[in-house]
Length: 133
Image (cartoon, one colour):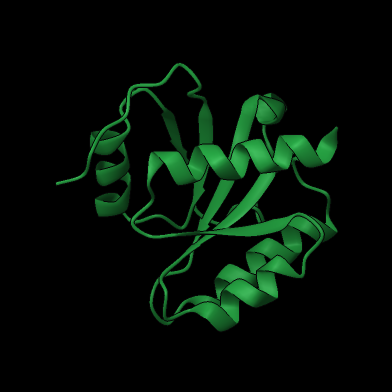
């Protein structure tokens, strides 16, 4: 059972390529957060919404066998400066370290292991904000 932490530091997170089960788990484990599923085809086929700067993070899910797509999405977001200034995370498991290392080399890329824990997400957001200062 996942331990829930109550915090006031909740925000909006854009989820890319998350399946319904992953989204449901996030809603259950961290109900104070606003989890927004990116439209299918985003960021290649759709423009970022004007409210983009209200997001605290973009999390790209790297499903089993979908590592190349996840890396392409992260590269595209970085190269096109989509939602510039918003933390970019790849959600991967411990067996996808080659992917994690490639994403970490991107100027604004980082990682978070699945299943996502609130304390880890908050730490990644804080680290990102500290870098900006």
